[in-house]
Image 1 (cartoon, helix red, strand yellow):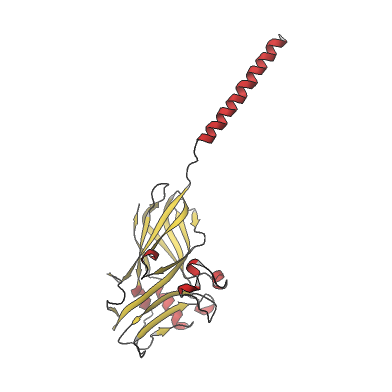
Image 2 (image 1 turned 120 degrees about the vertical axis):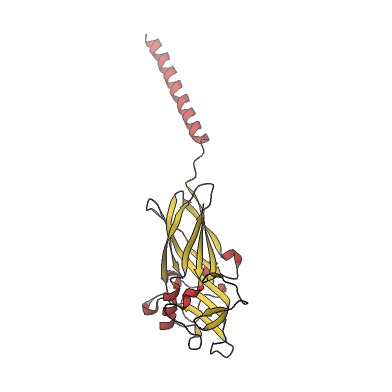
Length: 256
């Protein structure tokens, strides 16, 4: 009887370990399912209902006419809110959009959890921490021409061009808007709902399309080039322009 029990025990142990090996092998052979994907943001620069064309097209600001030679702005601290109210925060979230650089007009958000997203928020400009972190790289590289070497801090947005009504001898119009603290803080947080959910999956990259309306720079705080044609320091005027352009973004569509 003891011998029978002994052999039964041997058989049981053998079956048990073989089963464990099979289970382990099965686990190893089963690929893990992706949990993240990508989402693309695309910015379409406009002036009212017209496409923004640099250097050649005349636009009207109140009674002033002008041409645009440069239009740049920072998009940072991007957050996506899902339909379950969870929030994705992009890491190292700094993007410099330049109207004259085609590949800057759209970019991917990576490692986005696979979910349906209903809204986005971001900052126009560069947050206070990075403003006092000295010379940096990538979108924050001073070589991009958006860092005031004569004063700590980044230029959040730039608009340059020419206007016959400008009081500048060369008829230039130059607006470099900065400031990250105090009463002239130019940082603006934008929150926008999507017209339909952006569905992030492992295989498809939804694209959120934005309209960036340069016309918003000039209202509701009116700017006339005969009296205000150059803003390159912090002050009440730079703050007023930042208050204006806080409304320049809208979501036009979501393509899944």
